Image 1 (tube, rainbow, N blue to C red):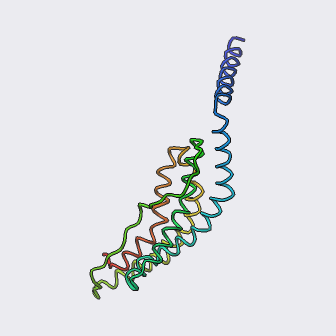
Image 2 (tube, rainbow, N blue to C red; image 1 turned 180 degrees about the vertical axis):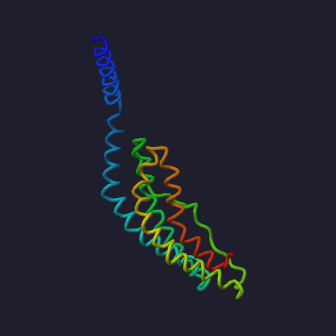
Image 3 (spheres, rainbow, N blue to C red; image 1 turned 120 degrees about the horizontal axis):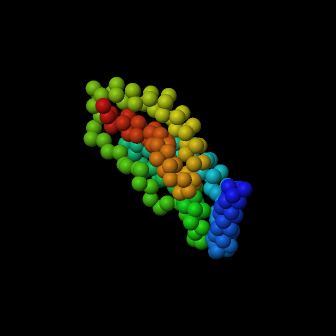
Length: 189
C-alpha cells in the first residue's frame, strides 16, 4: 500500500509540475510556436523540398559556369536556393524558443567557396574524369536521396541535441557533388 501511495503521489507531483509549467508559460509563446509549426508544415518544408532538387542539381554547375563562362549566375541562384533549403532549420529554432520575430532564411551560407583554377593540365585529365563519374553515379543520387531526410530533420536539431551531428553529416553528403565538381574543374588528385 505504501509503495502504491508513493507512486501515486510522485505521479501527481509530476502532473502538478507539468500543469504549472503550462499555465505559467506565456500565451504568446505558445501561440507563436503553433504559428511557426504551421508555417513549417505548410510552407517551409514544401518549399525546401522543392528547392532541394534544384539546389543539388545546380550545385554541380556552379564551378563549371564560373570557369567556362566567367558567370556567377548559377552561383547566385543556387545561393538563394540553399537559403530556402535551410529555412526549416531557422523555423525549428523559432519553434523551440517560441520566438515572436519571423524566422527568415540565413543571409549568408558559410559552406560555399568560389573555385579558382590556375590552369588546365592535360596530365591530370584522368582525375577529372574519375571525379566526374563519381559525381554522376554516386554523389548526385546520394545527395538527392539524403537531402530529403536532411530537410525533414533540420527543424528538430534545436530540440534534440543528438541530431546536430546527424544534420552536419547529412549536409556534407548533400553538398558532396559541389566538392566533386570543384575537384573535376581543378583536377585535384
